[in-house]
Image (cartoon, rainbow, N blue to C red; front, side, top):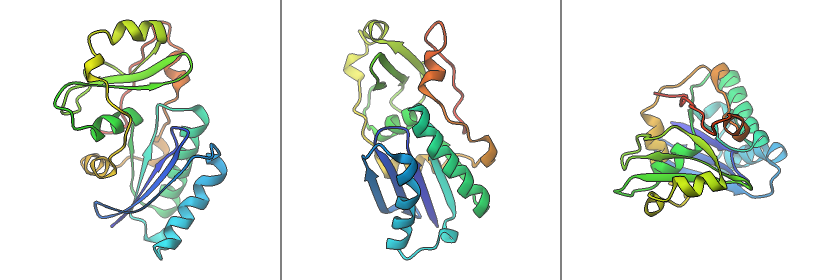
Length: 200
């Protein structure tokens, strides 16, 4: 079984090809030009592994939170491929991806910073969300993390753990794959937004 992960939520574009539950190939591109690079990189990875796009069995898309342009590109390409190839598509949030990748025995605070503050979520050690996804200004964030600083985790991705987690989720209708944008969170007056993950 071949699965393709598309992650365009951040400045680095990540494409990963799995065979069953193992990473067969991956590529990270930091040119900040996801729109023009994403499909050629997918094509390169498939060609390197002597695969036709019709050999893909599953799509996995990181739906954000992230930049407006970035997550929209990844979601659109994932939806297009899933629909045209008639294969399942699954989604995962960027925050959940980072939490899953971390093996801490403590609660975990995942933060992704921007110029004005950060968006994030607070998790138990077994990756259950304690607080809703949020966006907080720098001042509000400093107050929020006072008693949580010891639990801050690095934003590193363990692709094997991500795949194991996604294996337990349900595929969805490609038309229901909706990106989560930073601005969606920040626009709320109280600085918080409840965002339902697009999987069970």
